[in-house]
Image 1 (tube, rainbow, N blue to C red):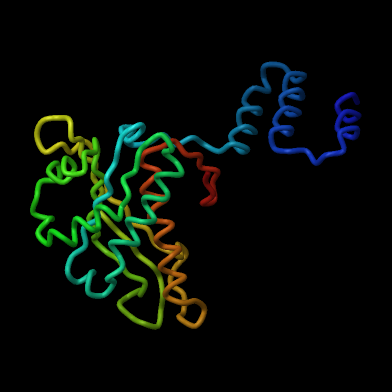
Image 2 (cartoon, one colour):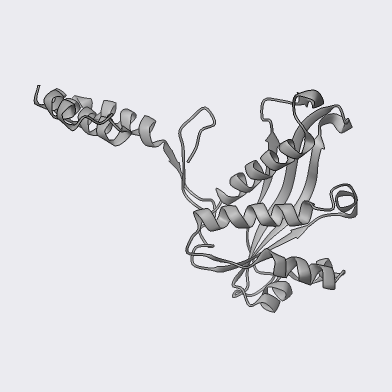
Length: 226
């Protein structure tokens, strides 16, 4: 009764944290047997924590280097810049203590050095004076499903690696593959959407999936995460 009176007097809608507090009081009255129930309630509210695959970007200076082959460059000449921009913005959001190098500097370097891709990654990293290089090798970049112009589904796939400039050897300390599709449920007829919308959403999904390799995020099920 006291709890109900307090809520009415506040006159505010109960937030998720308030709901957890009320549940905690109820569970305490149920005894120790209610601990499992409380844990489940908290998990549903906060989500399941997913730990990063690699923690080494925190507090580091990072250059984002994107490689695209000639075919991708011909079909999507903006791919290198778009991937760099989206990944840079997403990393800055979720790794605020890392210093993400302005991706324009890397793009200018690549344009001025056409054979940059034959250089060791550590050479590129040392050129910019960073401690880490995030290397993204695009394997697929398209908005057309099944090689047709009439059905749209974005697909950006890449091999992703992190190089540490301060250790012996080639410096590679992490690698994984990312494959992002949008919509996830399957292709859409072209008359229901447009290629630009599909591409932007696919880029956002790709950069989110990539960034999650480097920070703890919470999976709340049904594709929802924070």
